[in-house]
Length: 63
Image (cartoon, rainbow, N blue to C red; front, side):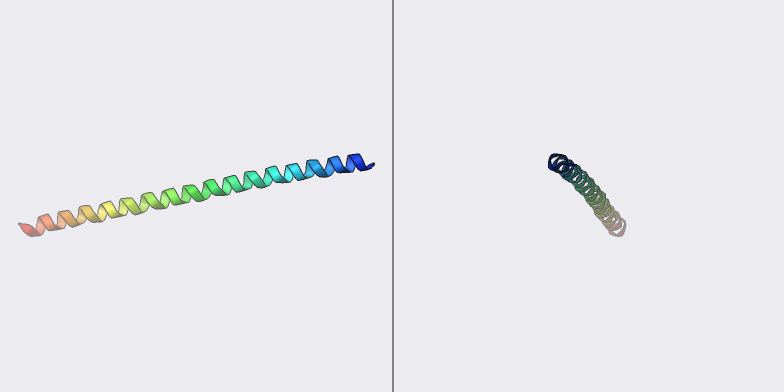
């Protein structure tokens, strides 16, 4: 093996590792974003349910 083939192998290896790292970070970011989206929807639905219950309770107690 000469120096040129070793340098080419190292360069290809670094490019492959960079691509794998980039894909991993992208997937981790998407998973985190999806989790935050689901958590936000659950919180909003819970708040809407509480407000609806409060109005129903107030309407029932008024009469």
